[in-house]
Image (cartoon, helix red, strand yellow):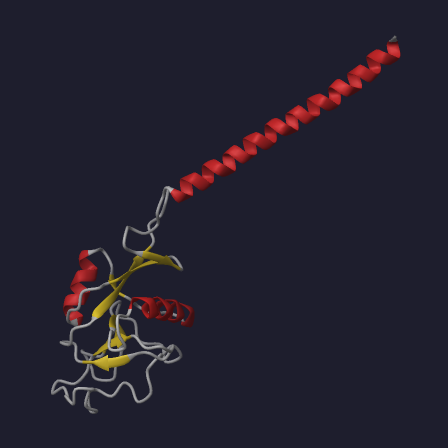
Length: 191
């Protein structure tokens, strides 16, 4: 009889271990699910903004001058985009390919030489890194070459726009021209 009791104890011990493991597994799964739900319910970018690389991007569908575009961005607690690396340029370019309505559809970015000719500064006052330039062929040209309509801008071209089918897509343009724009701001922290 004693053999049956020992065997029964061993079986119940194994069952208790299995029950404990099962309970721990269920609790762990619930915790992981809860963390996932918390992450999903805490958007890092507001509606209409797209997340990428710790930043949020807004692609305006309204055309305006460079200065008006910048005011629109700052009114939304951002600024015109500052491009810091090739990966960011690739992301923006890929998004523009979807958002452009036609080949002449261009987007303002936060780069200008309006203070001093040929001294390209971002809206955060940082200088353009010479290793991170994405100018189209023959750009910047300061309006010395007529635009597709044959116009030459008397005040030059001091603001930068992008929007081509390839990575080298920047061109300088008159700041008074009307284009869409790309706004940028940091992602919001959850928690």
